[in-house]
Length: 486
Image (cartoon, rainbow, N blue to C red):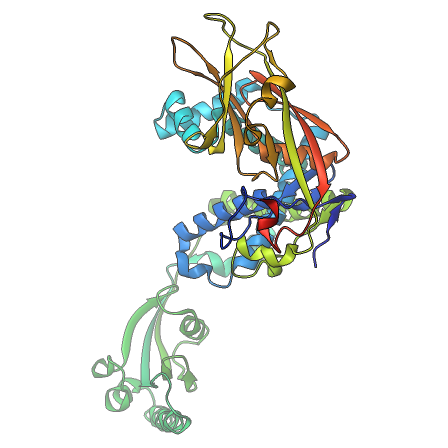
């Protein structure tokens, strides 16, 4: 059973509003891992798994996912942990990603996709995120690459002696064009054949081999007389076969036989074969000079992969890691099936908005009014607050905010996938968007400092500062009866 505490802070159970009787399963949020001073939440892990599954579906199809969900969840959690460890290591080494470098990288992506920055920003906002958030994701990507470059790539090299040794030990891999003319006597065995039927086909094959041996060099005559293969009329001649042209099991046999010798009776998935290599057309071996660059790249790839595994293992040993995740316990029902794991959760968290301050604003007619919406994206706004006028210091205080409906300033067990979106109300012009505050970020912040009674955050656009009172309170079982919260 998963641990119920992370550094003394009991897991949060977060409700999507107040469900009615018979409502859909409750979404449960909690911390699944802690990596030094950072955490991974369940919603973060689920989002990563979702993306991984979508990529897998596009590449291999939906059927290939059957029975692999546990593997996906474990792999996703491990990847997220490794990403955070590498970023932490990069920051410790003083590695940075300047804005100009990031801008060049992103511009190259936009140029390649033939899309403008404004158009791309509009698309990101429609998905509930922003260009700035995308920039930060790319910044972390580049930071990880730079860190691995310093810690892994720069510490691995391949010598000419290693290349020559690898070439000598694997010379058969570099032989191209070798072909063998194959004759065969074949007795097919139907899939699902009984043991008696199989034995009868084997007896025929044994008899044919004895006759082929007694005929001396006229293997083809025996094949024309006895073989049940489609090429029997041609003396069992399959023509010249190269590596890669037949299934692996058959290829291994053909390319290990000497020329002119009749094989034993060979059983494959298709049936019984007696084989003869009639002629050999030698292939050409690529020289070391021609292969040197390719082999250097191959050996570098292998050594870098080995070095990275060792390096990540070192980072994990040196880190403070807590894992609170059992993928098997999630079951087949996905998020909803997590209900069974949290029947004893007895805490709830609330965020009470007590102050809003405009940091950047353009005064038009009188003092500005501000309003905000709540939802999973700007296109999915569940409600909108009333307009409130800020004071001379561009602040909305506790009294003004408290005059609104409780729903508009108190958030009990908020869904981590939702945000508050703030706007400046203008009299004569369209409303100005001021940015958003994500509840996932608020939950992370309070999880790392559970004794804090207040938390101050700034919107992603750096235009508004918000202050919340935070309370973690004992309550009755959330899963047992959601009606308790009415």
